[in-house]
Image (cartoon, rainbow, N blue to C red):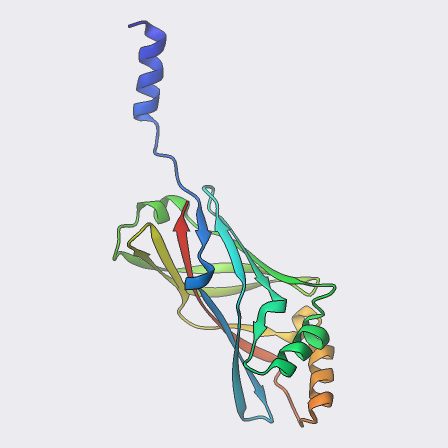
Length: 192
C-alpha cells in the first residue's frame, strides 16, 4: 500500500466520531402555557406546530408557529392570533440556545442529566434571554426527551404584548388578565 492511502485510513480510524444533528418530533412534543383571568381562573393552552433542530455544533433552534395556538375555544384562539400575537406580522416565536452536542450523542437509552440553559427568545419583534433548568433523557430509537424542570415565566411587557393583553381584556369584559405566564415544555428530538 502506498503511504498516502495508509495515512488517509489512519486519519479516518483515529478521527473523532461525527456528531449527529437532531430534529424535533412535533407529534411527540408539547409546549403549553397557563393564562390567568379574573385573578383566579386558570386556563391551559398549547401550540400545535413546533419545529426545531440541534446542530452538530450544539446550536439549538426552535420555532413556534403562533397561528397554531389551541386553547380549546376557537374564538379565543382567533383573538390570540389577531390581537395578541399579530400573526400577520409576527407568525413565529424563535428560541435558541447551545447544548453540548457530544454529550447528547454519547448518551445511552435510559441515561439522563439535568442542565441549566440560557434561552434566547425572539417574540413579537423583541428579544430577551430567559433561564431555565431542563432534564434530558436518552430514549430508545435515537431520541432524546428534553423537559423543563420548572416553567419558564414569560412577561408580556418584555415582548411588547401588554397592549394586546389589554385589548383581549376589554373585548372579553374581564377585570384582569395576568401579564406574566408560565410556559411548560416537553420536547422530543430524533437523531438525523
